[in-house]
Every structure is written in C-alpha cells, then in structure tokens.
Length: 55
Image (cartoon, rainbow, N blue to C red; front, side, top):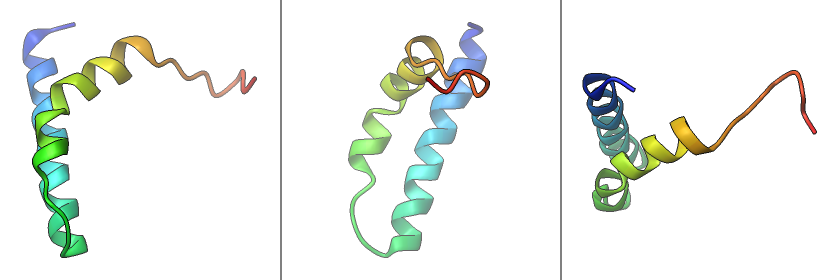
C-alpha cells in the first residue's frame, strides 16, 4: 500500500480514539493511539470480509 495512505489511516484511527474517549467522558486514549498502526495493518492486510459470502 501507499505509505502516505497508511500513515493517514493510522492518524485517523488515533483521532477517532481521542474523540471516542472525549464523548464517553471516560477512559484513556493511550492504548488505541499506540496500536493504531498495528490495527490498520491487521484490518487492511489480514482480515478479509466478503459481504456476499457470509460463511
């Protein structure tokens, strides 16, 4: 994948983690912010979902 897109995707995950913690008024965004790169790679390269084949 494009390195710039990878970085932007991970940055979006980080931003959403902060917003979710603020909305919930509880918790700490450290874990999701630290794992954003890992989660992006995991979901973009290893987890596959085909809505047509639900088995």
